[in-house]
Length: 156
Image 1 (tube, rainbow, N blue to C red):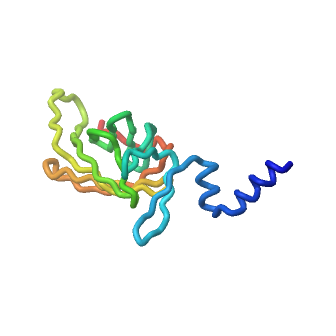
Image 2: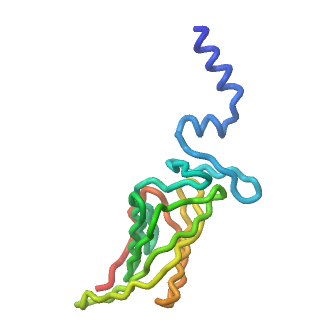
Image 3: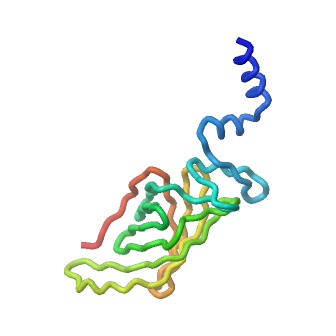
């Protein structure tokens, strides 16, 4: 009984946010203006954090986070992210990769991959993604949710 009440006293001294972090195993960082950003599943990699393998999806987009990189499917396009998908302490990120347009019907298999920058922010299970691929004349924004397969319609 004594050990249980000691644990309750310690827990009673913790903030609600700290208890949530202990129960979920989430990492916590400070966002813009000092607001606390809690991102479940992030692992520490020095100052920044790394998204764990899994899927994030939204309307017109699906991001598969892989060990050491990522694969992105869009409506009528696909892309890659090279290197670990790191997130800064304030929840922002900027990843390098490629973007490849797709077309309907038969293809020659010679789709042209152009350099792309994927940037945005992560807050909890939400990811705001900005795609910038000047070589394909593409600049687009997407909202993704962790664990969602997304809704991607490929060109026919």
